[in-house]
Amino acid sequence: MLLFPSLKLSKPKLSPHPNPSLNPYISQSQSKIPNFNRKPQHPLHKTIQIKAIDAAQPYDLESNLNSRFIQSTKLKIGIIGFGNYGQFLAKTLVQQGHNVLAHSRTNYGDAAKKLGVSFFSDPHDLCEEHPEVILLCTSILSTETVLRGLPLQRLKRNTLFVDVLSVKEFPKSLFLRILPKDFDVLCTHPMFGPESGRNGWKGLPFVYDKVRIGRDESRVNRCERFLNIFVQEGCRMEEMSCKEHDKNAAESQFITHTVGRVLEKLSLESTPINTKGYETLLNLVENTSGDSFDLYYGLFMYNHNAMEQLERLDMAFEALKKELFGHLRDVIRKELFEHEKKDFGVPKEKPMLPLLLENGKSPPPSMI
Image (cartoon, rainbow, N blue to C red; front, top):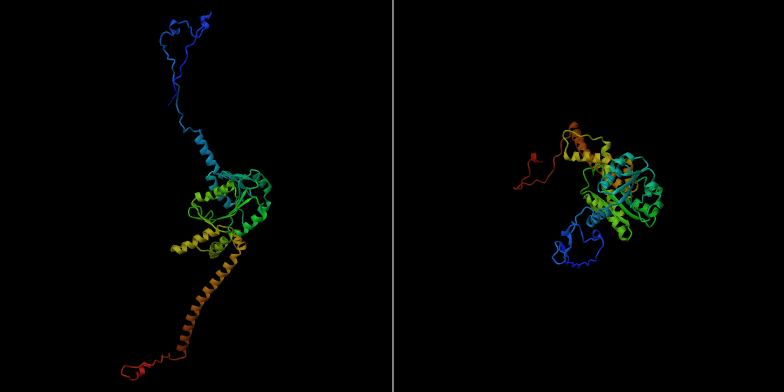
């Protein structure tokens, strides 16, 4: 409570008034006629009291600032390519409160509506919404065609372009060659999909390379806000160059997909006596067979390290077969020669060793 100094009021001077009813100080009741010779019933020395308003009102300044801060961390993201993977990412983006738009050659309007995503069948309409981020979720094989078909002139000139392809040097080259220099470029690879990430993204690797990010604070902050999407989900963030990524991916992802598809050709089935190792193989087949062949072909076609790994895998398989067949030939040869000796009555040769007895005598015939 705030107290202000008392305000002294001077005595009003009354002048005769012909009509008492018009005089504010005269009423019909004599008890209400002011008498300045005695202390008034209501003191003239009054105190102004101001009570503070609770600061935690729903629409006060603090609440508004907090609301603006939360809103400032959200992004308007346009997903290009709204197939399985695009929908998989969109679900989490919407859950985090981001404004998600989508475009695809196929009409996914119903699927988008269920996820809370605004779907645009025309890319011009999506670009006119001026998304802060364009997220390419196309296949590797169609990326260049889709990128060249976007009306870039309808976007803000500093829009952030992000890809999620399984190869990185290829999209990096496309972005730098096709996009205007004012556009920011972030190459990423969430190394999980609808199958491996169905129970959450915690601990799963997310690789990224800040290829071209403007120095303005707003553009740097926008890039960090996008990366924070995956930080919030608990991903293991790995920053590395696109070149380094492709080298590592050829040794891990491409080999994994190759082995998984080879096992798929064997039509492996679960048995009542599955071992843990066999269960791992069945899970590998399940995880890799769910991806399209275009993805696997893209891993091979657009990663120059893949051919080397495929040749190494083939050489390793041939070396293993030679090792197995080599042991098998030794066993067969041994059995064959022993069988021939028995058939022709050839006695087994005894090793002739220079046996010497302690007393210097020659060994008996039975030992020779």
